[in-house]
Length: 361
Image 1: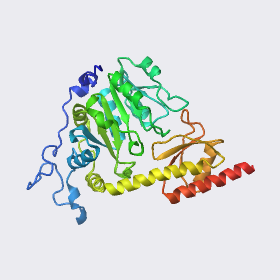
Image 2: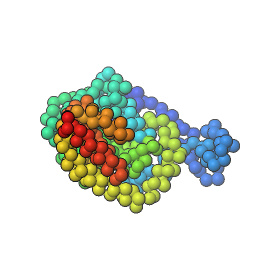
Image 3: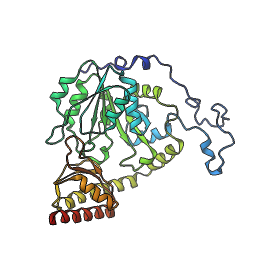
Image 4: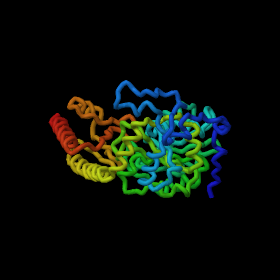
């Protein structure tokens, strides 16, 4: 049985802090009220069509959370919204890790902000590499490094930049045994056949699930990250976050998007279809050494020569991909996001031409 005690791993200064109470935390959008509490401009903005934006947004995003809760089938009280998932990662460090004392555990190759944010907070980062063969967790090595100063474990599944699902039973094993916070980043879960752990959030009091509206929902420009966790953890996030972290216009657009599920599923189906088309097409090109299994909206592609040279060639052709060759276990690999059919065809055509040039040389 996991002896998880939330208060025991919260930093003392956070545990004893008095949170900032914003002017609208209790009275946001009350009907028939005259708002003279937040030092806003009551006359509106210089542009008449922007008048509604002279007021601060709902600091707890209640209407947007309700829409998300209906789609995710979790309670609104178990949802936190951040200015992208990066804000949530930052909050996790601020709440649970003591600078120069505690450490976090990550599993490279993985999303870089786990390490960057940890270093910003003065938290030591312990790296346990994924297995070389199939990019999976090494449970034996994890047990060797966990101690009383192990406060956070970051797991990304489907993983970025490799694209694969991590074994569900391995993730469950870590959540059940670890007495600190487990952050499971499911940014790409909608592209995967693996079910989200959000369905079992009530079983795991030490689990924080990260999701986003940036990927499958196509709202990266709005910067809306989602955390799903116990009500206790969500309450601490709300205490520590900046008062108005999600803009009013971002909330409004996201609500409209969430009401259009048919188009969401239509786009999702197209992305999955294009992912298979890309895989089949790239596999026929001689310069492609390997395409790793993907449950995300991108492919990690290993080149049998210099990935940097292909990357630069594609840049000249106005195609921007991500060269991941400097990342551990990703030598000579490009990460290629699934585009529209026309974009994918153009990319494939250019890689074919590059491959022919290399063969002639």
